[in-house]
Image 1 (cartoon, rainbow, N blue to C red):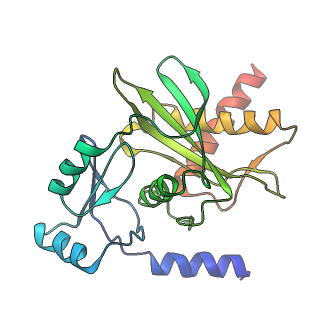
Image 2: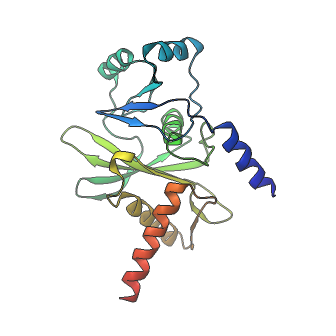
Length: 224
C-alpha cells in the first residue's frame, strides 16, 4: 500500500460516519452523503441535537455561511447582501454563468463552499487551505440572484497539469448536464493555457461518473 493509499483509507475511516443527516439550503432540504468537518461550537452542536432527532445544518445559499438553527438563518438573510458569487465572470450563456473565485482573495467564501461541498464529496480533504486554488462556480440566473448549480476547483499552479481538483453538482441539479459543462470548461482552460490537462486523482464517485459520461459523449461525437 502506498502512502497516498494509506492516507485515503485513513481519511475514509475517520469520516465514515456522517455528522449531519440533512442540510437546509435555500428552498431545499438535502440529505447529506458524507462527513464534513464544520467547526461548530459545542453549544451549537448541542442545539442541533436537541432541535430534532435528525442532525440538521442550515447554510445560506448565497454566501455559504453555516448555522445551527433556522431562526439564525432567517436573521442572517436580512443582512446578507450577496446576490451572486464573488470574483469575475469567465463564461456566460443564457442564464448560466461561471464565476472564477480566487481562494486567497475570497478565503472565507471558498472555505465555506469547500465545507458544503464535502457533504457530497467522499475523498477530498480541502477545507481551510484555499489560497492556492481557484474555484469555478456555475450559477443559474433569476431576476434578482444567481444561485449555484455546482462548482469545481483547481490548483493555480499544478506541476502535474491538473485542471480540476474536485467537482460537485448539487444533488437537486444532477443528471441535467451541468457536470459535463464544468468538465468541458476545465479542459477549455487547459487548452487556452497550452496544456493537455487532467483531473486530480483519485476521483470521487460522483466525479468518476461525470468523467465517464463526458468522455463517452465526446468520443461518440468525434467518431460521428
